[in-house]
Image (cartoon, rainbow, N blue to C red; front, side, top):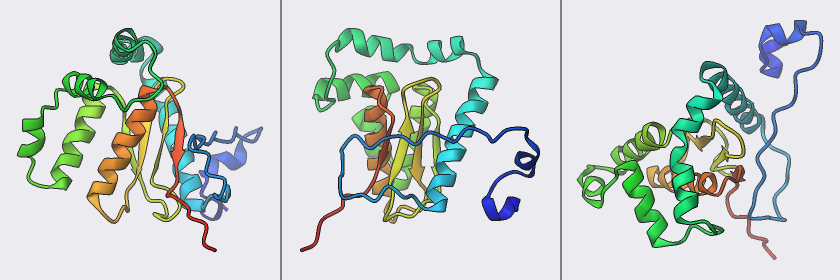
Length: 191
């Protein structure tokens, strides 16, 4: 049963059913999307939620308040942030992470740049980046950003490394706006 339902054996001995993991919402409001998620995507959401719980058990709230002090600085510098398409915000974020254009251009491949960007987001901003196998046609990534610790999940089977980079930056944008999100590929209605 544990393998069939992808649950730990100990779950079957618990006195109550564990709370269901909350799925991030899609803020682009794609009405054409079917809300039923595959088993792989549901498993990725449960894992990310579990990892967030484990991180909170390992580090107290004060730890994350210190890690996310950059967020307070962002709100002071840009108090009415609703969109993040401002070049000044991008420049501020680059400086906060320590990512110069020169460093970016020194990377040898999109694979190297993805790893550099992921490391900077994790170590400089304190946001863990998880990679999970999910159907590419269903989901590109998601993030949790409404309560600490924040996290980003990227689809590990993206066909192109540049797609992973885009998803990582896109989800980081949601975190800057304190907005948990799940991002589906664009659905086009065919007539």
